[in-house]
Length: 295
Image (cartoon, rainbow, N blue to C red; front, top):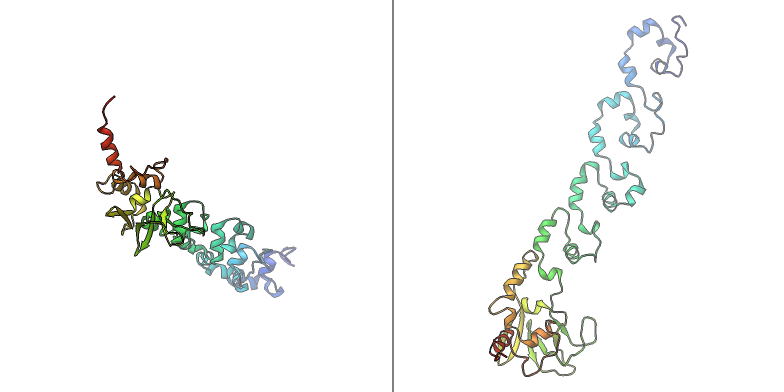
């Protein structure tokens, strides 16, 4: 009225001095302006609108925290770190990202993201049935943090179907009897060559056995009867190349010791082997070939 201040109502000054008795020079001299300013409310006094549902509203969920004075004492780092993924990102953003969705489902807070990602199973980000190695890792419950350790622990059999024998039959995983292949009975983990008997529980070498019969089974012979047993130690996948070379070139385990019948059964020889030579080893054939007279 006396000093010419106009339109004070609705202004910041009007909010600081809401009462007429405070609007005199004497009252101003005695007034605690810090207290007045600290009491200002973000929404009611300072014009912050639509705070509910916003990031600021989630940082300051309580009414008592929404004054200037309260803001001075708030630990914003703590408040921000306590926010969850769902607090700072929309449902649409989260649903379209496998990692974000997993973090949101785990109620991960901002300051926990690094730890939670380390705990994340590989299957969250890698589709199953896409690669034999990743499929084996998923089966072994590999997580991001222990991925290197899990890879090192994989064996050849974890990744590939290394079973060289199939049961004769018509059921799932079984194979029809083939008269050109040897038959085996299974006793105590050993496959021993035997004659075919219809209806008996017998096995034959898988046509897809390939190098696994040669490299993952030890062969013994007794009176012309072969017996195969799995190697006791499971070769690690990381040493696959060196292991295969060692087995395939070994004096007692190498390709040279394989009979023509074995090579036919595992698919290394495509033509059926004549009975007169089927028990010849590859070394025998090479040796005999060297004795042929020159033309």
